Length: 535
Image (cartoon, rainbow, N blue to C red; front, side, top):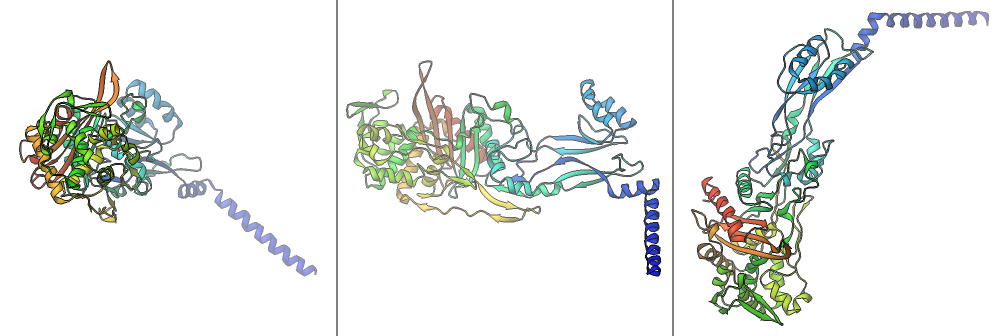
């Protein structure tokens, strides 16, 4: 027993000695510093990026902002002196506490600085100014999360494409930079090349934005490709900067509202749907009516614009001159259900999901029972009353007319791409549906051409290729300083032969569709011709 106790005591003593030796060796000052150097780093994130949003040609719509100089600064005599020479006094005062703290930090500089302790990077902003298609792209919150538009709808996918520029500094156990040791830079921003592809065409978007800036204070422009329904441009005015959303939150003009996907009073552009319903019901395009400037329905007189008397007209002339009384008379001959069914088939009363999670307003299409009231039917005949629609819906109707009667829901989303710009997901394109006879669509195009050539749409006539269009000046029943506020529309296709684009221009207010919106249509059409996109 005593022998065993001696052996056990010897083993324990030996183990204790080895432990003490180990602690002594590790606790040596040099060894401690070396171990800390191997195990500790001070990590500084200089910049974070996010997946890119592209147009249909692979042109980046985001990540194109002004490049900024961002520095990773290690406080020290040289760095302190360089910053003192570079920064204005008030800015230097703000930076002093960071320098005194002694830890590396990031700082935006007005210019590049070259000295020990300062490493400079050039970083592009997420958005440019002005930012094309701002209402479509949306914006981010302070943490970089999407809060509206495509940024919100595809936040998960765009966040997955996140990259960073990170600088790592070796530090000791006290979190102090180790002298003589080099920092390491890790740059994964190449990941931002993955992202979302839209149907927008930057060239056409630019044309539409310039036209909107020239002619519209509050309004929208939509350009669809015929017959696919791809949204090649979508503009809303007034504009906003995605980098400064807070500054416009209380603006009475609502710059954050996407007017292209919001519903408004329609007015006479709806006469295209009324004419389509009449033609589809077997009524001849040669049907005549004599306009005297007003027509009485159930004790109420409905007037043409400014009570103008148009005389005897056919359907073509009534479209070209935008005669209200002709259509009040005409639609009393069309079954109401047929009228509503035609309007529904052309997209009225429907919301469009133009991209996953991005939905337009449905607007208001009257119910059958409301049209049993003669005055309600009369109003509906020329696009007044409770009817509302979005510029996108009106563009969808024009696209169907230009596409020989085949309606295709407008859409914005093409798919997702990886860093090599290869599609990892392609959107399923919406299938079209024949909603009008080709003969009906052809007649409507002829009527719309007459409007451009000699009717209310003359101010939108392009220099080349011809066009077809319908104007509207929709009453709202709202008055400012004794003057009724109207909604102005110009909805057309271009060129006339073999149409390539449906273009809708909308303005809140203005002096009528032809006067206010027509010139914007003309500029866009002429721009398409100049770019060689209309041939």
